[in-house]
Length: 267
Image 1 (cartoon, rainbow, N blue to C red):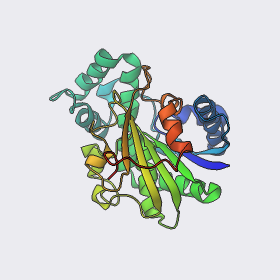
Image 2: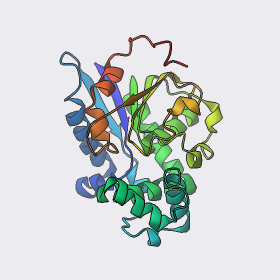
Image 3: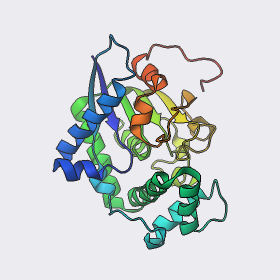
Image 4: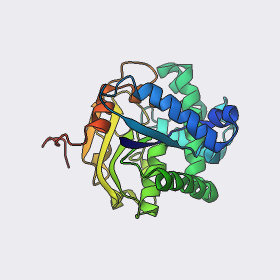
């Protein structure tokens, strides 16, 4: 049975609110992840799926008004969205997201900017997030780690901080690791490349996922990424883990580790 550990992205505090404890939130997340992945996984496959929960460490409240974000959060939002619409101030960046992708993406963008800034800017919360993921890796000893969105940043730093943890395959989905405002603040830096305990690293990104920048893939900025695979989920909710987990391309990577790398996509 394939052991898989998920590392979630932003906007998961609702799981804790509903479940009551981080452990129960992790179980609820794993249930949702399995429901999505189960639609694409091969019929003869078996998976032991868990999710590492750290959402309570990066949550600092819900905010619908970009003008009310903290200065660092506003800078994160403007820096990120500025790659698509240069010169936008934070309220303008939030409005651009809504006009370009709809109100759901606008709210997602505010949550993304807040939680990413909290993780990178608050040392205690960062360390607590890394510890939560490291504990889950130690407890479940996964063959595969699947890290989505902000979770790819947490997983990357966790695997570098705990080089004793070995994993056959790291799968990153919709990752912002190569985003300039993230890459420059990674520990260790992005030039450190693939964590030493990771045997293979495959990155997948929806072609419309504005979190996964630059469009060329992580391998254009970070050494050690074995494959960068662009995909199209075909639905509006490309920012969510569910959209990725329902993709046959993602399931193929998770469940077919023996598939040889192609010459033009390996690094």
